[in-house]
Length: 328
Image 1 (cartoon, rainbow, N blue to C red):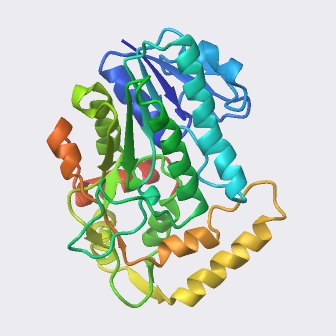
Image 2: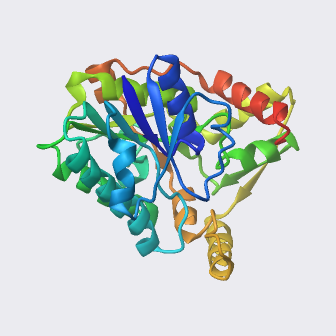
């Protein structure tokens, strides 16, 4: 079997590409002219240079593959239009190329985001696939728009959508600053009341993505992928303390107004830089939510998904990688 992975130069995509190779797939990866190839160097992958704004450039990428894993997209942009151009329009162009050049593909799997659905209402009611999406942020809105493009073609192509919760693991740069600060004995909590979230380790996510694509039950369906347990940030920091062999991490509570103020300032100064800021007002809105929890019951039922990496083992594995690679 041959598989195409977009976004393989990034955190999640690189893990998906490696696991596909371990399972015996021939792996093709899309790259851009400006791509950093550090996670693909010396790997037995075929690299194809593309531009997702140029549908014809995608021809060589989609020709002859059995499975397409569309992991690529933007996680940071200066405004909604920029997010839409990358996440919705790039997905639409890729789908168009598949219809034109490889309409008999066995599966087109789109990696979306829990942010499409928005936060859950309570700890007892994690969000599920039946609830209409109510994204809070420009990123979430653009991923929802991309999902809509995928589902428009569910009668013409065998499509599947997965929505990962917050992801962590080796190579992750998003949650990395938190691990770095924890090694220094410090941590931050947003607000003065407990917050809860579901998390997924990159190993569990890569496995879940591929298993979803290989199952016949998942065609035309959408699934959340996350831990089966909701964690408080206190529990996450307890896992960090254990992983770092620290007796204590000093946790500083930041009021919501301060988080949003810092986010607004970061966004303002980001307007004057070439690269969009990772932390902006949208991210601030994300951070102050009480419940970012989702249910994986549908994924468990349809293709046997189960969390295999505990929070303790996952945090230790991630910390060990950061330390070994001198990130912290």
